[in-house]
Image (cartoon, rainbow, N blue to C red; front, side, top):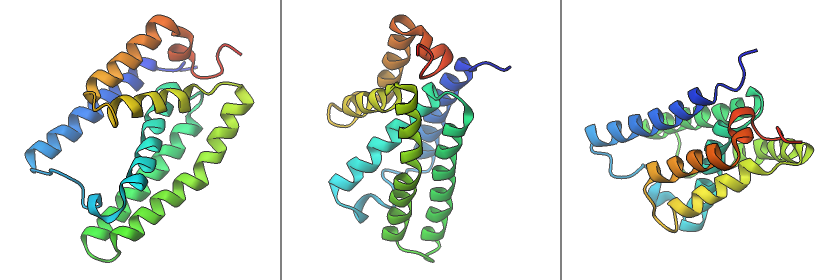
Length: 165
C-alpha cells in the first residue's frame, strides 16, 4: 500500500498555512466575514473542531476520516460563497458548519473509542490551547506538535492513531 504518507500530510499542513497567509496578505483580509456574526464562545467551539480536524489530517488512520473533514470544509466554502453573494446570511453559514460538525464528529469519536486511542482530539485540543488562549504562533504550535510526536511517539506519526493497539 501507500502507507501513511506522513511527510505529505505534514507538508500539506504547512503549505496550507502558508497559502492562507499569502491570500490574506495579498488581499488585505484582516478577518473573516463571519467574525462578528457569532458570540466568542461559539467561535471558540468551532475553532476547537478545526484544530481537531488538523489533528485528523496528521494522525487519522485511513482516509475516510480525512474525507469527513473535506466534506465540512468544501460545503462551508460553498456556503461562504453564497453568503458573499448575499443569498444566505452569516448565521446560516454558521448553522450549517456547526451542523456538519455535530453530524460528522460522532463517527470520528466512535473510531477513536474503537481503537482506544484519543490522539486526534487530545492533540487537537493541545494545539487549540497553545494557539487560541495562549496566542502562540501557529507555525510554532504545529512544528512543536509534529516534532514532539516524531521524537516521543513516532508510531503515531508514521502509522496513525491506534497503531500501538
